Length: 352
Ligand SMILES: [Zn+2]
Image 1 (cartoon, protein in one colour):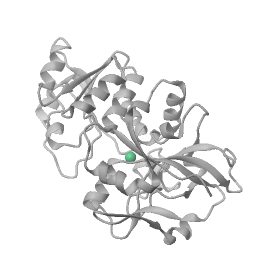
Image 2 (cartoon, protein in one colour):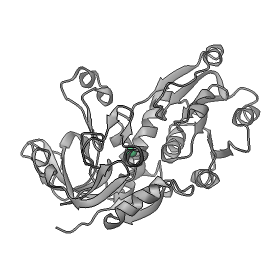
Image 3 (cartoon, helix red, strand yellow):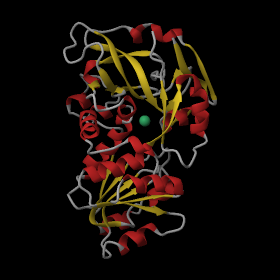
Image 4 (cartoon, protein in one colour):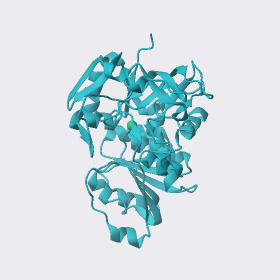
């Protein structure tokens, strides 16, 4: 079975990967076997490719990439009750230990033992089939395409962030960063009740995509305009009730409190490999609430429901689609970070 393998930093190949055929491919009683259909390229996949590591997770052996996926169930374990062969599904890529303390408390995403696709040493799913627990596999309504379903994983980050923010209808939000996560966060903030969302970035093409998503999204090019000043000017000097940090840039993160309203909430989404500056005084005088998120929990069914109903439309975020045979080239393009692209996806061959 051919897979997209990160051999080591900067080296990808499309090749047979026999090692995966062992334990990971054994179908447990509550597992399903899935033929992969569409896989999104995530910033983390690209980062492993270009840097060979993310924080403490280091690629020490060849690893299959990919964790944003949809597909079709082709086999079910004997105790599976909610899925059957032929069902179209999307999959939550992190599998926690069901008996861990974090899982029992409902915070399975921060279970230290979680096994997450394409996070060393766990393989991803840019391969023909995978085995996954029924509990983390979600059936798609007919109205949700495979491409949209492969957007559920990044959308879940935005939904989790919006949930943590505790949005009230009519709030004003700021999203720093118009990459895939920034834009799914903006869509989630609007779906969660925000009246308007200021989205800032320095890539004008990304801001144009952001602006086209909704008339309630106000794009701000942070290179030519002062974001806090604009937000304050448009809120009678009050500021935004919620600021989402979705750049992972220390400089952007250092300024999160400047556009924030008194009593407001900052949600830190972007990953920060190193300690960053934090304006404690600015946070203090606002009694700012600061939330941090790590991936998501309990968000996939909500995301599927919102895409199915039309409450959230992720289609404009999918800017390029590649065939699996061109996936090495797809990663090269993704690594060059084209300013006009948000989400690139790879479509897997369906025969066999
Ligand atoms: Zn992702």
